Length: 262
Ligand code: DAK
Image (tube, rainbow, N blue to C red; front, top):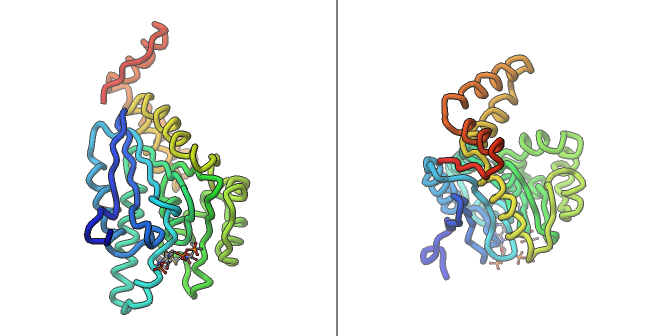
């Protein structure tokens, strides 16, 4: 298959409003060229407004999650093209980060450079025990440019992030787990099901509450604690303008499963 004859990013529908976004350029270990970045952006934008959407799972086809930005393509770029590429990359990563529902990275193999940065744009990171992750950019005379210098430190702390960025080293899944870079590891054949179990658990919760929790946790980050708690209070209050918390609490007291509406 050539790039022209297959979809570079596939959307796969599951029950309960769960959607997998799979990067599908396995012949290049899913390396991110301009077409792949554009497709990630467009597919994310396509699902972002869906009311029934509950969870998005991002993964790669073949033996990689994403092995980075496309080195062969970057080598050919003029500075204007490099600027466009950088902007496209940020648009794609931001489109993933801005999805209104939890986004799970299922790291099935190599997640390097721009590939790890794609995973870092997600809310929850899980990996196969075969996964290898890292930010090798400095070895190429580059720096991580799709958010890696900013998002990694926020997730695992700047001390460990500096080591990964400065050494450009590749670490195994168990080390990523120890650093808190991924939440859990699964045997390769169990990754899909393990991640789906977590996605279904989220999808069964109050959809408005889950979306609200994601928004509040994200928007509260740059605020000081009193502003952040004010934001939490306002958002809590707003939930009471919808039917959802009443159904959730009534169902709990009635000892039945809640029937949430999307
Ligand atoms: N780009 C292009 N092609 C890649 C690739 C990549 N990143 N990674 C793998 N491939 C291709 C290989 O070239 C090979 O293609 P053919 O030679 O068969 O045509 C095919 O995928 C299979 O790869 P290998 O034969 O190398 O497979 P191995 O199992 O031997 O090795 C590997 C797997 C993952 C260790 C190796 O492929 C590798 O080291 N890949 C490169 C990993 C890497 O360095 N990634 C970081 C890329 S740099 C910025 C924005 C973004 C960035 C920087 C700045 N700004 C806005 C400022 C991001 C930079 C990066 O991500």
